[in-house]
Length: 210
Image (spheres, rainbow, N blue to C red):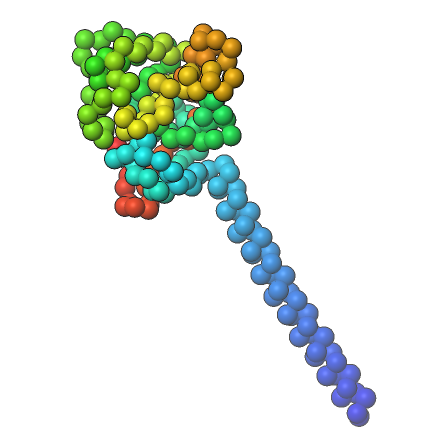
């Protein structure tokens, strides 16, 4: 009788161990699936970014955090005024965030703090600028390539953008002459990572209408 009793206890213990192992394995699979989903979403669906500078103030303040959507331009093209995240033309290991100003094939002229598209007599309406534009605000002309976009920051007096990138590229030896350097002024359509859609830190705000 004692032997039968011991066998019964051993069987019960084995069943309990199996149950515990099954539960642990179930948790491991659940955690693995969650991690996979989070990694997949961050790599292919959204961009979770912290803004390190004031180049987009006052639309997006320094240290703000935002979500960008990587699939925004799968079936459409960037529009003028979109706030986009892209690979910095001079160093593609860095991501920048700016506003789309010039579209493919357009001529963009900066004159006395105003922007004119394709020799229009009427300047572009820019209600998003932080303050009166005084830095590099005159006698600048861009001819946007057919496969690229022109980007500027909203804080024009404190933004490193298309007005400076050619100079930076030449200074850093990325271009041998001024003509070569000009291509760094533009962001190729394939280098646009996504569109900024919502700011969730330092104030919650929809960026699609900013």
